[in-house]
Length: 477
Image (cartoon, rainbow, N blue to C red):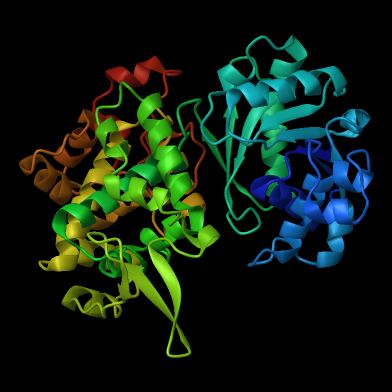
């Protein structure tokens, strides 16, 4: 099936960016949203009514305005905005029948999504691909009660923000999803949209956000418990550990503190069986930041704030104890200085993680917690650890995925230390560590089915014969 036209339902931050990126690929789309129920002051002054097309399509037009102003730019060329046609759910139902792919990008509330899908099911063309950009609502809940054709053509296509620049696209199939639809979407997203595909299971927050939010909360908790400043944590958890310069706190400002809080709370409620769910409990300092509207970039202040001091612009950081802004301190830690001279990211990650100073102390704690937690999520969130690694590299800009990082710091050495410290390690990792210096991941891109020929662990239930094999037969040196 060729995707020639798309209907994007929801013209907010993500919807407008998805439509923009489709335009980057030369694909026309309809950008639809609800009809406003009240006029703005500007609309009243202009003599417009609630029936005026400008008013009825206002939210879609706002989405286009947002896309044009966004920095970094969401469009390759602003002229490509012409490929996006703004509209609304009430007046433009017929447009759905023209769309080869309909993607829902409305607010993360199941009741609202269900109402949108009621409308979609009445107006779509049978056989068109349907998807949701949800980041946490189970697919099975989204398709409950839908027709056979709807369920067969439905999947989750979870883009990451900013859409143009983040490579990751998580695809989740439902029990009734036609697998050829998933393959078509993956091919289209890779070839036309330049995305890296990660296949996730229908579990809370899928792969990247399940691990990424855990890692972020573990980092924030470590800072609070051990008295690290915001700038210290961001210096440690940036390039020295193979992460983006935005590290932890700056990343939270970009994402929005309210978003981080919302996702963490949702995860806590959604994973009652998770042995580490307490990590998703939101620390009081984040709750207070939301109350004070310290939401990050969207409100101009979060963990960092741009200040004008003596006529000069400076960036202050938040004191986590007082919630007052202060000038940033210079971060001088010996291991971080030495790490700048280590070009190989694997060597650098190992050096900092095992450093015997302030940076190494917190780097080890958070890294050990996050790696062990990630391993315990196999096969819950994915049968294939390479999907997990790619999810974190493409969705969070890590240079090494969790399992690649584990290889870098040394599997046997690190597992021994983790066990001594009481960190729960799954048996399949212990088995690998017991073999000596064996890599969890072999850096070769081979088909997922060739488990006996590479150092990639898959716990797929599709081949029960694997369960009877000793680990030394599954993982080769």
